[in-house]
Length: 130
Image (tube, rainbow, N blue to C red):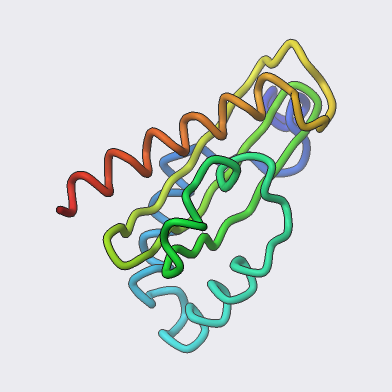
């Protein structure tokens, strides 16, 4: 086993791996366009909104949708996804490692950091697409 496998478990991905995968998914290039749309639909139904979705302005933009996957393992918190709306389209991969707080309580500082980073990304890309 590699050091990464011992530390993180079975699989290891990087933010860049996830960005490449999500860009292909958003473009309909994973197996086929219908399959990509089906995967996005499954991701859109993900229920964990404690990280990247937490501070996004859903009430101000009824077209805003997030198709994402969260992950957590002890000191690691991750959220990757596709954000789309009338005035914003982007993919993101936020990985936080070596958190001092384990657990998934709503006030976990690492989870709040993921949420804040996501909000910064949203504001950046929304402004960029104006």
